[in-house]
Image 1 (cartoon, one colour):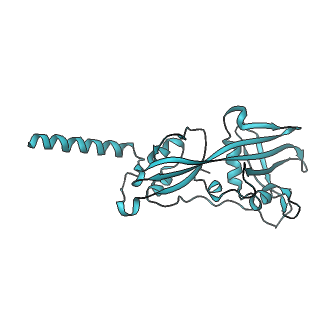
Image 2 (tube, one colour):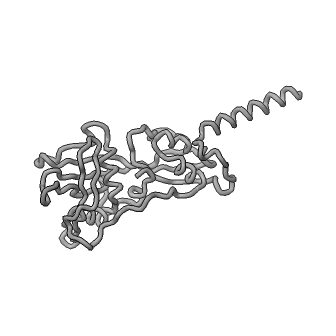
Image 3 (cartoon, one colour):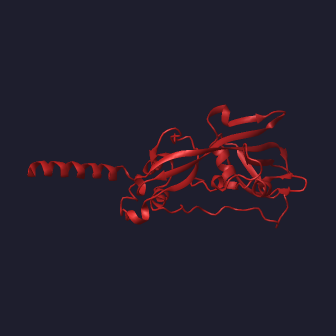
Length: 233
């Protein structure tokens, strides 16, 4: 009988060791109590092409394989919203043509973001001001859309009639998890398509006009907050 108990105990210890070995190194340092680290958590991620499952469940700890920092996984495991860097917002301290950001897209093209403007009465505008005020997106969300579009031609297409204007398409995944700590079981429960349009031709005065707009497809007006609050942008 004692031998059997020892065998069962050894097997249980081996299973626990295997689970902790699979967890992010920074998270295994100190497992939090079940009281503050159990229950449901929700978050969103831009689909960066790493293969986050959409039709099947996965463990919260698996996010590390998809480019999510261990620190963010640990915070989610503790039931906290991961801290993200503040994003620059449009201001009225300079003109609409002022460049407020630039970066490289998936193919190495330089994308410029101008402050822009938005007139809600005429529903006219462009740039960061329109993107923030009308569509509830941020510069980080637009950058992610151009850097992580859908694979191949489906993610980056010429805008019909405008040979130097390109549309980018990507998906933002809303995820729900339940269980305990980083071993929660997660599943994608919503997918929101995002489109961004960029003009690489029109010069103001010497550089391309840049981002014209970005919005959630199928959504009138403002995108849901979880799109711009994705933890990997």
